[in-house]
Image (cartoon, rainbow, N blue to C red; front, top):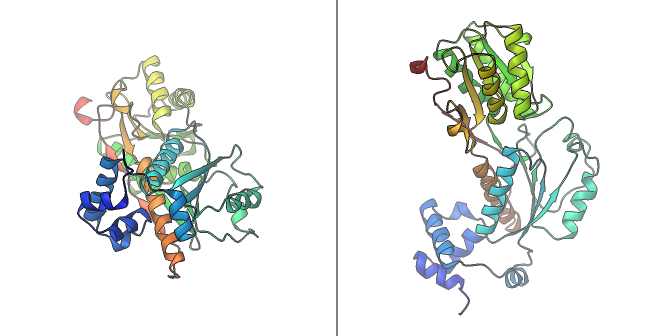
Length: 344
């Protein structure tokens, strides 16, 4: 069977070969979104795979992205890396993945030199902002010859960053509990050395303060993203504050543990205790009762990072000026039975 070519893709999509090339190169500012989607559909239908060897010879590019990742055991980071791989494949890039075990690694310069030695076109730093793992940015001595996009970290004026608005997610969850009539709302936070966990806590705190409701430290339990910590956290909080009638749990796995603790303690959900999670994992709608949760599209986060990196790569190769920017994706609230006033 003859190899599918870029001309075949252009014919099926009803565009020029130059347009297909722009989509593959990530030059999406030159292509309307409707046209881009037609091209991507044609690529999928034809199972077109660009020849990286031929493209590299012609353009003096490797068509490889370096990805530095962490935390595949967690839902968010694993989904993000999946999105990175999907979009990279769609745009004709291969991926060079390096997983680190300690986010606070001090071998960043060595790691990035290794990436450069493999002639990557750009780097995505997909390591959550945990503790001091970005301290190297303040004193970095290595100047990358390729662009880098950071994921899930605090906005920085000198960096390209793509993140989810975790603060707004905390606001959404807590304001929803307030509208359901909850007066004493507790928090099971993620590990507070994670930037995302601190942002979700801040949303919880500011929503309560604006409503004149208590935000005492004794209403907070710090978990570790795992279900066991959610179970332990809710047990401890209810033993200390039996008046708690609402709970924002900062991820769905911990919320699953909290639901188990509520059942064991004889607290009906949502009649006695309304619960809201965060993530909207695929299983959240099948918890008992189905879990109200903040939906964040972590796959799209990874996809968006690749598209942004592709634009920066294209601009840098065309000698166009690039200005660091932060892209913030907004979460949504998925309301289900675990918090609905009608069920209380």
